[in-house]
Image 1 (spheres, helix red, strand yellow):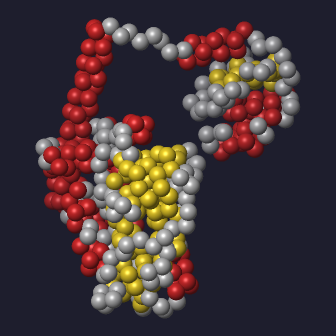
Image 2 (cartoon, helix red, strand yellow):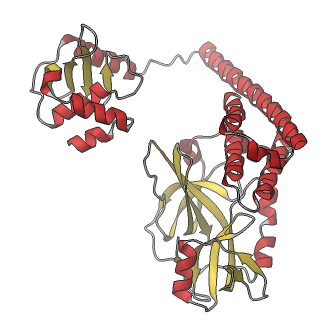
Image 3 (cartoon, helix red, strand yellow):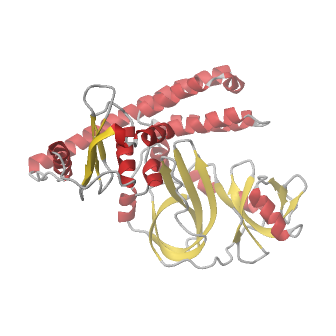
Amino acid sequence: MDVDAVLAMAPDKQVASSAARLAAPGNWSELGYDEHALWGLCKGSGKKPYQVCVDLTDRATKCSCPSRKFPCKHAVAVQVMHARGGAPAATAPEWVGEWQHRREVRKTPKPVDDSPEAVERRAAQRAKTVEARDLAVQGGVAGLREWLADVARRGVAELAGRDRAWWEAIMRRMVDAQAPGLAGALEDLAAVVFSGGANWTERAADRLGGLHLLATLAANPPPELNDVIRMRLGYTVTEQEVRDAPGWRDTWVVLLRKDEDDGRVRTTRQWVWGRERREWVTVVRHAAGGAIPGPALPNGEFVGDLHPYPAGAPRRMAVGDRDPSTAARPIDLSETWTGALAGLEPLLRRDPWQRLHPLTCKQIRLAEGLVAVDADGRALPVVDDVAADRALAIHGGLPFDAIGLWDGWSVKLGAVAEPGGAPEVVS
C-alpha cells in the first residue's frame, strides 16, 4: 500500500493528520515487519511507549493507547512508516506473536453441540430473543402514538419551531426500542420540516398520517399487511437468506435510479421493469464510511434471476445469476397520466407507506412552468433538474415518451424515448 492508501484508512481527517506527523523516525523504536505483521513502539505521553502492531493480511490493528478511534493515529502512522520503507524486516517480538495467536484462536470456530438438549436450548434462546424484541418494538410503537397525539394537539405548524435535539430525542427512543424503521420515518418527517417551502405543512401532514396508520396497525396487523408492516418497523432479513430462496427469472430492464445520502449511509436505488411479470421491482445498494455504493446493475436489459425480499411494492430484490446486459428495447407505457396514476392503486394497497413509484406516459410534452402534458391535456409537475434539461435538449418542444419517479407531488424524469422508441436514461 502507498502512503495515500494508508492515510485513507484513517477514521477521520484529524487521525490522518496526526498520523502523518507521527510518521517520523524520531517517534519510533523497535520498528519491524515480517510476512504476517508490522510492529513498533511509539512515544506517548507516559513513561512506556505504546505497543502498535498491524496484521498485514487484513490490516487489523492493535495499540496500547487509550484512543477510541480505530485505527488510531499510531496504527496509521506505523503503516505510513512501512509504506515509506522505514521499517526493516525482523523477527516479531513476543507481544506481537501473542496478539496474532489470540486472533487465530478467535477465528477458529468452536465445535457445535448438536445434542438434543443443546438444540432445544438454542431454539428457546432464539424464541426468547424474538419475544424480547417484539415487546420492545411494541413499546416503541406505543410511545410513537403518544408523540403523534401530542403533535396533533399542538398542530403541524408548531413543528417548525422545534430544534434538532427535540427530533433526535424521539428518534433515539425508536432506535432504543429496536424499531429503526420508525426512526427513519421520523428522520424523513424532520427533513420535510427543516427544508421548508410553500407546501411543507401539507407534506408533513402526509407523513404524519402515514406514521399514524403504521402505529395504529402495528399493534394488530391485518394478515395481508403483516410482512410490509414488519419491514416498515425495521425488521430485516439478510441478503443471503433472500438469495437462498427461489428467484424470479425474467427479462429485466434497468431504467430508473435515485442516489441518497443521510450523512451516515449512502444508498443507490434502481427500479427495474420485468417484461414477463409486467411489474416494477427495486434493487438497492448501501455503502457506509464515506464510500460510494454505485449501481448494482448497469443500464440496459438482461435475462436473469432476481430474488424477492418478503414485502414491499415495488418489491425489493437481490441480484442473482444473470446474462450480460444489452441495450434496452421499448417497454409498455401508460396512455395518459390518469391511467398511470390509477395503476398505482394495487401497489398502494400492498404497501401504503411507499412514496416513490415508477410512472410512465406516452407522448408528453414539457410546457411552460415545467409541467408534463399528456395527450388528454392533463399535466403533472416535473422536477427541475439535469434530467429535465436533458429531455428538453433531446426532444426540444416535440412530444416524447416519459418514464419517471412519482413522489405524490411531482415527476422526476429518469428515461425518455422517441414515441414508441427505445428508452434513453437521462438521470
